[in-house]
Image (cartoon, rainbow, N blue to C red; front, side, top):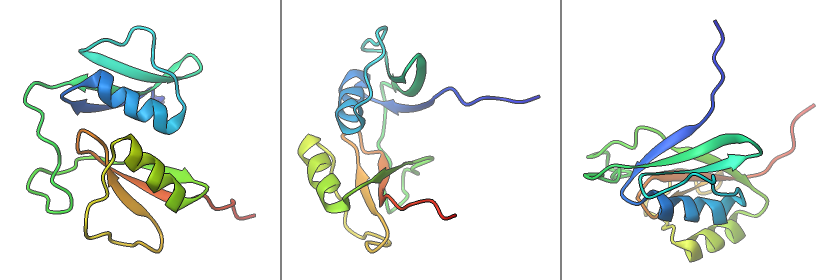
Length: 125
């Protein structure tokens, strides 16, 4: 049996707001059937990233771990400083205690989920 990943879904208090953040950050369009209970971003005709409403959502407490992060997203960017500036302008925050500032930057999305930015590097041949 072989499975194909169809989406990664994040719990949050406001799916449309979080989808709007990631839509602006990635350039991916909002799924046409998104609503206040579930919103998604698509890549062509495939759902890629989903956001589902959870009434008692508690954001992860990164890096402390009181509320575990459970998962995080990684994104490559051309210019790390430029990406951090653009994402914080959209509502992301940069927590203190960056583990490897020479290699990546951890940010928190508007719902508190950690995600990482790494500089784009060419594939090795």
